[in-house]
Length: 261
Image (cartoon, rainbow, N blue to C red; front, side, top):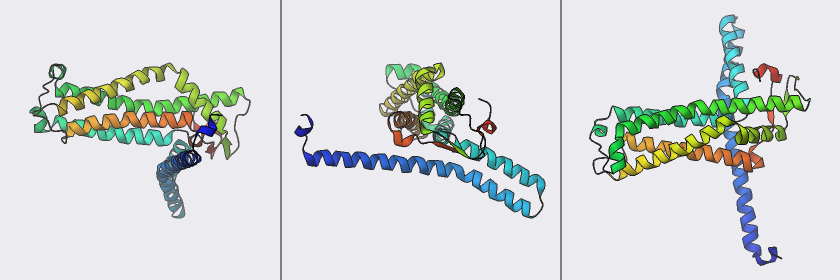
């Protein structure tokens, strides 16, 4: 038996480590979702305050904002969208700062390929990848939500109650369906690989040139590009391989009110 060849202590330790990691993932995902829900809760409380002083227009505005924030955070992958936007905006800020930084003008790539590209062109492409990441994240969430709609209709289980739950199996199935078979995801997969290679090459060019400083804004721009690649890879791996990360979706209104499928 293969199992008898594994030391008991090692097997128990490995199981404990795996369980601890999975438990940590649950808290990380739930914590990120709770943080994303805070703006909606703030708008809801603001609406209650306005209602108490008979301020109708502001109350309606706060209620509408609260509904939008709540429905966004109740959809799958809301924490990924938030983190993707934060990471990409920070990268764009570093790219923009690098373009206006005097040290960037004096940074010359010594590698033959890097010299033909130049640091300014490298930064422009880096900004393009960051913008693409910002577009993809909410689009991917939308595609998964649409797939959930279609799966519920196919199973004749359209949810119309005021507060209900989308089964975990439906959420996981919709995510895998879009990830594996959507042509847009296939295009983005190659774009994500290209962005990683571009960031990696840029980092090598910066490190290899005596006139460039990796601690300048251009260096941080390449670092943020690598970070987003690992963020997207980590989320995809967890949602695809770890059942603990794909939970049922609790919705507070009829599913039709969340937008057309």
